[in-house]
Length: 222
Image 1: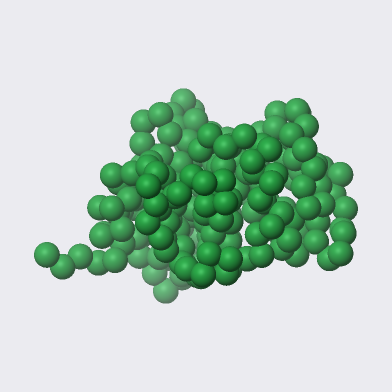
Image 2: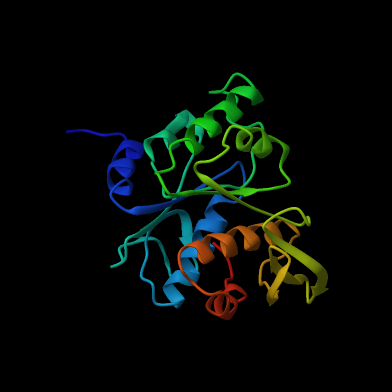
């Protein structure tokens, strides 16, 4: 049999507790960041990332756990081959307009992808992105929705931001409960959102915040 890459990834991915990172920006960074944290915590994930994870010197790997981390690319609607346990929605903007007619059609594709989360699974989503919000409004009971953002209404939030040596240091809260303070190693305010996404996902894989804090600031990128 001959399969397109996305179809073969789907066949592999669907047999695991899949974590799929979708969005216009940040898929490689966040999927690589989560992989790095789980590897350092001894959780041995399976993963396929769209760029080399510098500290692991690889873009893919086979582990002994049930976790499979992958990017979910919206081009050609290839992410519809995946049925994740956790779908991460980082952001939704106009892109791939050689394939999609307009922004509305892109949002519709993301909604279809989010609707493929397995029973008992989660959507972990950017709670301050207007197009992500359009997707989330379609889900009322299943799957469970967890939000992140630099705003107080989200489930995972960042506050008390401070620039230290060119990168951000900030407190992470979950439902208004202080988890701790982190200093990330990647510059840019957008990487605060990426760190919050990774923290939310790592928490839902069973890592406690102490384990996350130990490794999140050491990640140097892709």
